[in-house]
Length: 206
Image 1: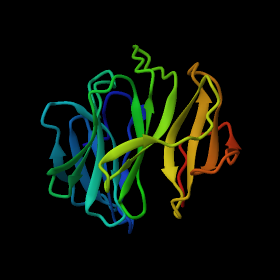
Image 2: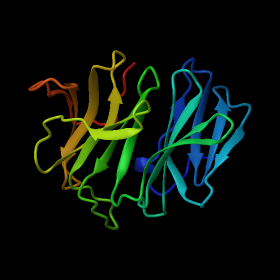
Image 3: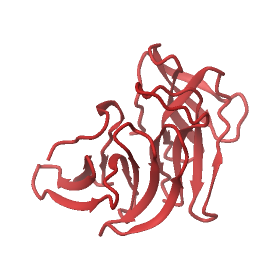
Image 4: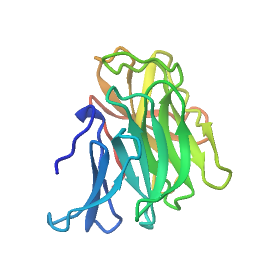
């Protein structure tokens, strides 16, 4: 089964901590496969037919965060399943607009993601004011991470640094056609937003 969904630009997969397996979505199903291509296993299917677009596997291998949406990328739900496919936590639902960028913290006690706070929806999946949010599994609540984002731009594809004190992410104009840059910021530290790389996107820490 190939990776598939509503828009190939917004579909992601995730490796386990050792790099021996990874998970990926194909429409409403989530599969696990070994790095050598063997052992393909379906581990989850959405109960309502929504497409799985993004997934992230926690470092300890016990939790998988999923973003599911309709065929247009909207009516988003973000929830967590265990490796047997049981839903264990609901992070977000009932919010209009685009959501993305799921990433567990190293401890698995937090999940970072992005959301367009305007709730804007259109046929080209344009985002107008996408900001970074963090969900705490300890308090069962989400809150915005202030990144001193420039008006008229979107912060996307967010990832934690290994020490969890910094974030790396893509920033671009909300016109949907301008160049993309990779930025870094320290959580809770003013004036720490800096451009690392210009003209690129989809960062990750390695």
